[in-house]
Amino acid sequence: MVSNENILQMIQGKKTLEFFAPKSDEVWVSETFYSVQGEGKYAGVPAVFLRTQGCNLLCRWPCDTIPVWKEGRLYSYEELYKLWKRNEWVGSFEKGAHLVLTGGEPMERQEELTGFLTFLRDKGLGSFVEVETNTTTSPKPSFDAFIQHYTCSPKLSNSGMPVGRRRRVEVIENFIENDRAVFKFVIDARSDLKELLDDYIEPFGISPSRVYLMPEATSEAELREKSIWLIEICKAHSFNYSPRLQLSIWNRLTGV
Image (cartoon, rainbow, N blue to C red; front, side, top):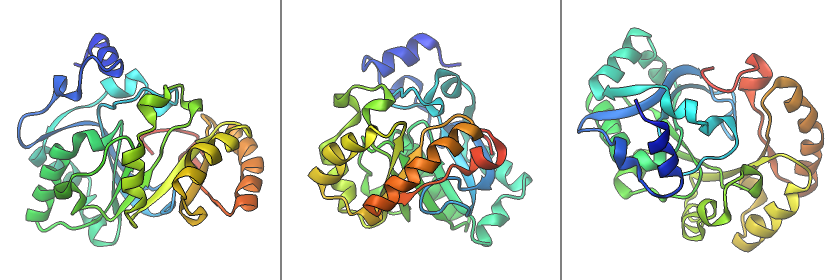
């Protein structure tokens, strides 16, 4: 069990994820499930989700709360593969389902995940692999070779994180050069637009066609309310609107 003290020390920059690093052929998993992608470019596509434990940020959004960090377990690659096989998820990849690596922050688990993706490849299992990242860590070549799509989600000040922790210029520039990456921003209020334009879109020259705006919401009702005005912002700037199907369909944030 990961202690609150260790988590808080890591969030404050006093520890790294090495404090619960796995041994070889293992990966820390918060949850894994089969559903449809709820957000971004591939919303609606069937997908097996692998949510890794641990993150280098602690945003105020529910995805990165301490309980989500503490839930889960350490799986060997073989155990995880057998779990997917028992649930008949392995066959879904053969039919076109994606594999979504999310978190937490999966880019902080690249060594583990590269090993697992290699393991799957050696089993003869191929899939379209998506990564959902907070855009503070660049991909290593060995990991990047397995990835077909990155959903980069740089955090705005509405995340509650200091700018020095959440905005990494070199990493953002790296992903801009990667034509497999799109950029998804969580919008909480209309006033977030100015920060989005001033800190990201204009200085980095991000094409509107690669930008997805998603409402911050924790319930179906809140999502519906914010979507109405956020879609108008998307129309005005030619940005893409990102749904949150897990809320609009199941009224839940994780596990669906």
